[in-house]
Image (tube, rainbow, N blue to C red):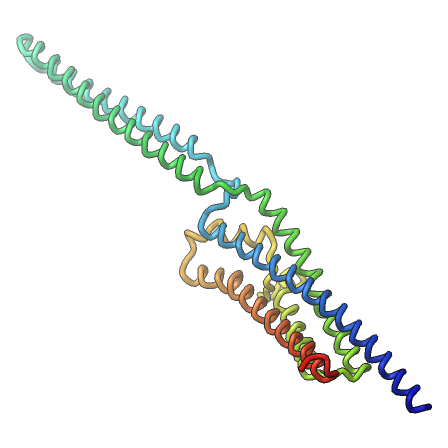
Length: 278
């Protein structure tokens, strides 16, 4: 009778542990999904800035540049006209009276030629600038102010999700130990891998600004600083930019996926040991 009561108590404890494992597994998958989605969202924003699809809001409008170029071309045209007229006037003063009429006609033809050439060049420049405005409107279609809010929200979700993910794996490890559910090697490996993933993800550059130690999470100021001058940077600076934003992202995602796969093996090993699955 005592043995039957002991077996009944052990069965109840095992059932409670299995129910707890089921709750932890659902929560673990939930936070894993949100962490991956948030990391992918921030990485997508990086590539938007890399391909110059973001309007940073600190560059002069293209229309202003077009107007300045047109004014400059007009000023050059006027200067050329005045120089041509002055040179022709000097010729007129030195020539005989009978040659004045032919010189005046030559001056008129020269002025007309200069005006036609300048007008054509100005029209072509304006057309090119107009096409540039249209293309820039197509490219710079994402406002940076909206993306900054998205980055801040994604960073908060990533930090919260990864912390909860690691804690859930710790609690799952404790439940496996107490309930003797098995699969301890898998859940222990998943916990350690998730711990390394959290170290890669967290923004250590904010806690230790004097040390060149970066996490997969980046701030809006960092992204703007790295990408606003990317086209003018050297090869080493560009390589460091990819290491900073792309390599840390890939490493963090790989570690999270690895931890998730190990935790799935733990869940399957637990159910297999209890005879629930073959």
